[in-house]
Image (tube, rainbow, N blue to C red; front, top):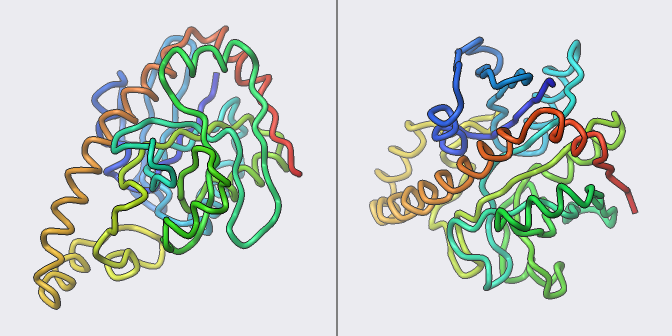
Length: 255
């Protein structure tokens, strides 16, 4: 079984490298790529960078000569509902972009639904936006249902639907609906959506008050990463025949 995992940032997948066996760094450019081995499974993990455009470019590049049996995106998200606390692990049951009325609905088998429920992984609406935005205002788009804010899910759902690739997206809440990051992601990332320490240092030099914001963000992200990667590792350890059947029955409907 061939499984492709995408993550935007090292912070989102670093704990996973310790949880899966047979890790090898396969490439550093154009995308950082790792491989892992589990019984009857070949797992490739790529670091795509933040944002829908980076995710789309990374996916198209990686799948040019490779068709995965399962595509997984694993990353952070902002909570858009007061019940979603820091570290809560979710999966996208539906996804939409803020700039479009299209809704992508994920259809899973009963076995997969049961597994996710038993693992306390919550179903959410993933609302994708290229800019962080006002979470309070964006939460209105969810009409009261559990929802998260991210950048990539809707775009990847669209591509997976077009290519008929089984796709599941896992998210962990790294900031709640009332949290303000306290800094602009565009100030600390490059054109491919990768965090640059030089950008962090320059931001702190310009505004020392952002040092506390970066520290709090790091603490929240660490908790989210640990929970997220434990959930993804456990999911990947489902025996290959069962996981293959679950993946083969994933459908994405565009409404």
